[in-house]
Image (cartoon, rainbow, N blue to C red; front, top):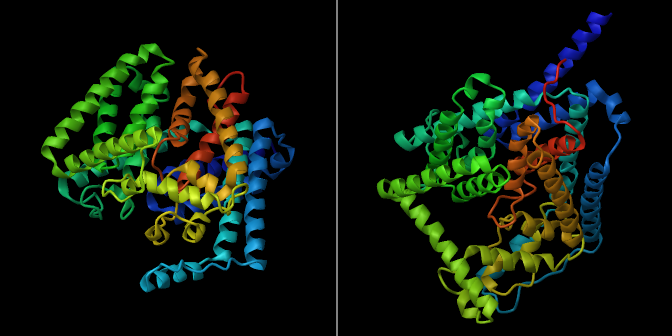
Length: 465
């Protein structure tokens, strides 16, 4: 009987850990596989450990997460009912040219209530994922060591694939990047290779924690692996991931002054690499110059706004920063539903119906405003934004106290999750949609694991089963 129970427990734990460890691979394959992986993980967690779900006691942060879940459902339900019973009657402005009027009316006809309802309900899966990870971590079912291994392996694969594509024009699978100045690696038409490397490279950096042979060559390993990370992100053409990678390393090196020398070395390597690739690769040179010009323009426009010298004619400039257009667009969209927002993923619809400054902006709305916080305030209103900022702030502060300001050597294992979380919630960055599957997956994994860690007096990952 004892052997049967032991085998049963090991079998269940094996399935759960396998599904969890395959998440980094699922991201490479695509959103459909990611969603299947998430759903299977939740289902098997409920089937195998349903008793633990009922016995689990929520702490303060868990309750806050649950409140946010209820708020998201409420926002989606309220907007669904409002739009069903009191549909918006909006007509194009009188000064619209006939061609623009027809495009505008087509946008309005595409306002899909079923889509918004499904997105609000579907987003519940990430909260179920959060609580599943929390419970399995508390019960010592999930072994984070294996997640380190798979994250490192697949990150290394993506880096080498991007390098291969850079040299040969095609990646290992024979795919060609759809963009002339960026490389997609194994992601096909999606230009997210740099973002993937930026997130999962932190696990690769801390891999020696679990692999003792690497500890003997730690200094050499760190210099080599970070040089490869910087190199692969630069040639991927994704500029923001490189900046976030360096900002994150710089921020956390402050807490461990002995690592500051490594960060300075990394910074030098990065600057030399950028200069080198600018000189030998025109596409990279163009990419970096465009990024530098965008930053200069943003500083210039910001300075004019502060001084009160900004005029409408500035908005017509060809070099007017796209980020400011996104801000204006999201601001006008937020004013339509100030307190509870329009519901998850509603920005793409509400944006086309807002009162806007520039006529042509009505037909140039993106699916999201390319910043997490602008999207959250548009989709969940000021209440939703405050709840999420409060949650992020609590977890970040508590995690830094637990992981960075204590000398326990086991705490180093938590660093990658904290660093990924810091980079993901960094406020001043251009990003994908907060509610997009891949972004939400990374955020909720980090949330669940960090909440579990900050609750413990001593972080310990050597789970046995």
